[in-house]
Amino acid sequence: MPIQPEQLAALMHEVEQEDPIDFADLPFPEDELRTLVATHLCEMAAAMENFSTEDRITTLLAVSAKLVLENLVLHVQLLRRHGLPVGDNVEALLSRLRKGGTPE
Image (cartoon, rainbow, N blue to C red):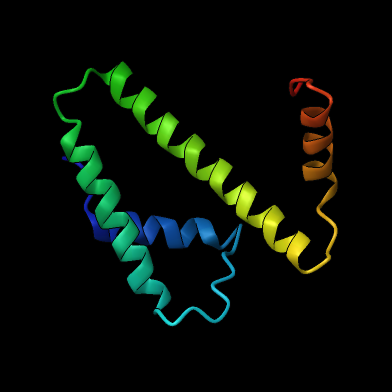
């Protein structure tokens, strides 16, 4: 049985205990945002029910990679907007990218 949005939202919240999200002053309740995202992802997963396991994993990895990249870009933009330095890991990654290198 596929995971239900409520279960996924609860897992998201549990993961956030280790890596909290700064919701700042967004005018939306955090739980409602989690539920919205969880529902969307469960709908995406259901739309892939006829995909092979390999295609489903590949698609979910592509979606995850896009979201991580988007998060990185937004994070760096926010830091730069406020004149704050990026962390050592991000700076090392950006340095490699500037030089045309690939991560090791």
